[in-house]
Structures are given as C-alpha cells and as structure tokens.
Image (cartoon, rainbow, N blue to C red; front, side, top):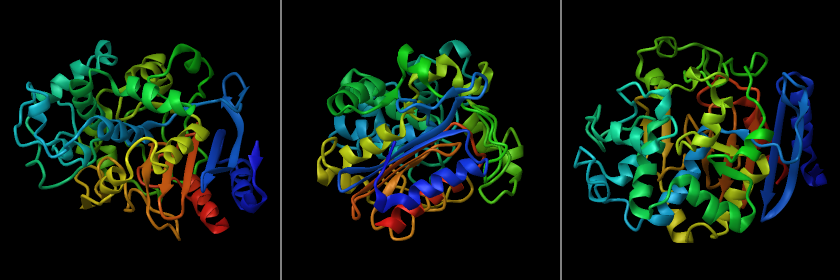
Length: 381
C-alpha cells in the first residue's frame, strides 16, 4: 500500500471507516497530475471464508460501468445526433437518437417483458426486447435514469457500428494498452479473485442486499421513499429487470460477473478505475475536444426514475443531486455505482479517484464513505 504524506488525511479517513465498522473490504486510489498518490486497500474480500483483500482484488462496481460504456461509444461513433434506427434498423421509434440514449432521455428505462435467466448473457436478445418497446415519454422531452437499459441500448449501438461488444472494446482499447484492471465481462481467473458483495448493515446511508435489483430501503439521508418500497414503481422496475436477485448470490454470481452488462457489469480494482479516468483526461482514450463536448451538461433537473435532480453529459454524470461534487472541484465528472463505488475525475484540478467497497450501502444518490474520501482528497490539494 502507498499514500503520499501530502495525502495522509485520505488514509486517516479510509482507516477510520474500517475502525468504525463501515467497511468490510475496500480500496481507494487517487491520481494527481498523473501521479499515483494514494493506493490503499484493506479488510476482507469474502466474509464467508475470511479471504483478505489483496492488491489485485477487484470488485463488482455496478453503474461505474456507464462511464466506460460512454467512452467506448464516443470512441466508435462519429455523430451522436443520428437516429438510433440509422445504425440499428430493427429499432422501433424513429425519433430516438444516440444522444437520447447517452443522456437518459430515450424514455426506455424499463425492460417491460421479464428477461429469462437464460438470456442474461445474451445482450443482443435483451436489446431486441427494448427495440420493440414504445418510449414511456416523448424522447428528448425529459430524462430518467436508465439504470440497466442504458447499457443494453448503447451497447447494441456499439455492436452494430463496430461489430464488437463494449466489453471486448474495453479490453482491447483501454485495459490492454494501458494496463488497466477493468473488465466489462470478467474472465474466470478474475472472477476467482473478485471480492464478494455483502449487505451493508453498518454503512452510513442505509442497507441493501447484494444484487437485489431493487433500490434498497433507504435514501442517503436514511429516509425511505414510497417508490422504493413499491415493486411496481418506475424506480424498482428500472432496477429490477433483468433481476440479478434471481441468481444465487445476486451480483456475486459468475453469470453476472462474466456477462458484461454495459450499464452495470464492471469488475475493477480502485487502481484500475482511477487509472481509467487518468487515461481519459490525458487524452489517451478520447480526443480532448470530444471529451470536453461530452462533459457539456445536456440534462439537469428532476429525474423521472430517481425522483431527485440528476445531471448528465454524454453518458458521464455531472454535479447534481445524484453526483455531488466535492468542495473545490472545478470540472468534476464521473459515475457512481449502486452500493457505494465511485469513479471521479476533475479536468481542472487534474485529479482522478477510484473507490470500490464490497459492503453495500442502500443509498441511490450518495455514499458517505466515498464522499468523505473525495472531500479528503480535495482538502489535501
């Protein structure tokens, strides 16, 4: 483990969260001006066996995946304003553009038909179900978090354009060239050392079962919303199909870890997640102009699915109720993952942060563990 003395406050926060029982196992990594200044890990990767969290222990990071998927899409597409049907002829609604998919404006946050378990690894089949649906609102007139469908929709566009899956392109264009420990669809040797997610009964922000596919039982402030308790609410329908809970162990199941869902399928170390954002802001994954345009806020305001304010550029979350930026951040962006994981970059401060825990919180907006660590990073700058 390593922590530059200038960033000892980050180490203090990280260690305190273990001491106070908020963590089971976790890791955090930070780059500043391209230098790895924090690389910490600790705790238990599997509470059933007592397996320790090692330097190369990855973990399932839920929606942190979306930033990698957006980067892949921008890597292979020349124009995001084109109708999806131009690239995917079987797609039903001619008014939906690729930009609508990337900004959660397509009106397709729910797979209406129950996805059978046998189809969990057949991403084109799930995408075909979405292609036949009618949007729940007029595309482009509102936004609502496409928790899982974002990945199936954007991923199918990527496949139609490139002939490759998001996971294959992450491996070929991002992970292999730059030595990044990130997988959208993990191979068996990585699955064997992946940390097991567990319920977060001691985590600030509420509780959640590993891979339940529901919003959990509490907001970040600890209060329950009626929509979280109603299985037929748009929120829970968006989060619950395909239902990870239908597999033993939920998101810990090998089917989920290897399926590579482009909306929630990332397996990564904290170092890999921070390294991805470092490569991104260094211009290695996208041209600078493309990235800056992608970070321009496209939507901001009430989210029809999450019921609080959210904000997005082209696939990247920008500061809002669902992605609160640390004090002092200048040009922060990134993505959070349900349960607590965080990937964040700041173009202005030249900072990248990756945080991955295996004890899940239940908040849909902010995990206090991740927020404290990010605040500590900025306090040290």
